[in-house]
Image: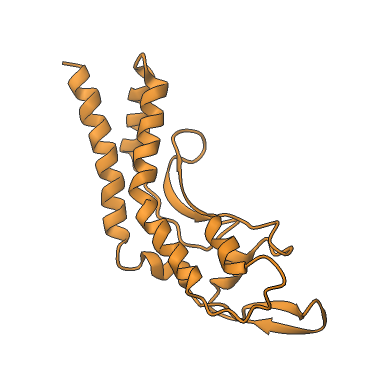
Length: 168
């Protein structure tokens, strides 16, 4: 997955595609789609908050000279919902951080199991290897993935019940 750690809480069930089609047939379909997307994002917000606290708990040996690596990564962690197109689903994603000291892949590199990343010492030679808090993103979802998935399904079910009630 480009732009973030490999964890992907995806709900790509056929039911979501069918639900989006049913919403499109409604007169106020655009508003219903916005509401469904908002409810699905809200269901994933607790997971995003746990991932943010995971990166913020990474030890820092910073010099205070530049923007904070941990805070910069935490700002880029967001729930994402797409209802249509090539990919339909809901997930929490750590987006790339291009403006963060030229370290666009910071979320992915700090989450790596091995190696870490190479950096200059105070902007000059020699190069050194820096290691982040391993698996901070994945560990945030380890115990509660089923809970987040159930919350997204509940948002879908709620919208489906609402559409069914209209049809009566």
